[in-house]
Image: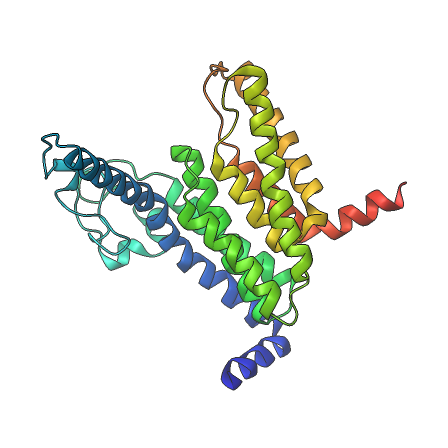
Length: 300
């Protein structure tokens, strides 16, 4: 622990080093986040298929015990990273954040098919988020925990965009981690009481909207993952920041949704994932929430 404390002291004396380490680490972690974004939904689908087979088997139905989709179990570590088109394993030099994508000109070296721009964008976003945390907060355990907070939000948002899923394996650990840090971390800016109330009010806020919308229209307006994500944001930011998160996420979500319908001709019946707007509003509240609150209260 003393070694880590000394390292924090070095970073305090050399801010440029602190910023550089944050950016570099963020880029490296961003490469792993791409793996999580692509494989976690596959892992969830594998579990659902297995549970369905087990349920049908218990009911006495004849089911296949093996499917092509489960021929090779997918985890975060297996199989090796490979081209999604030709399945050629990716070499180490082709896995360097951002640089490899630029050197390959966004194409697989083996088959020439395009490599999604998602890869460098996620890596860059992870790096910039870590850099933003290092810029706004001094070196310490709280800053390190905020890196994790930002990276989980980024991962959750991209998964929601791709699949309209917010995995419990991301939102629930984020929620509990916020509560534990409020209890144990001395310089955590949110008290345990405020974190707990933030989690409860965050969940109930969208839960209430969900049921009100369903009673009025007979349709489901959002997924349960949105409730859990807002609860996690409440645990990290405190209940005081929830109005900012809800207001900005709803405002931006409405503007983007209307623009997609009017400009891109998107069918209004197709659901729009709300998780990315919650995540973005949560980051806004993290970095500038206090300033926004002070400006609002000062204008009253």
